[in-house]
Length: 66
Image (tube, rainbow, N blue to C red):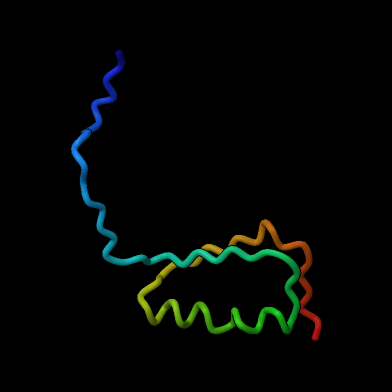
């Protein structure tokens, strides 16, 4: 038998704040579909976020032409 040394007593995990905003985008992004994202970083910063992770691994197309 292997003892991992971990505590088996139930505990409580409390998250007091989150300082990193994670945004996962998927699909196609263009000038118009990106519009709702423009205010997101400022809004998150107002709520105390100081970091941003932008996951674009599922974006299939991106164009900035208007």
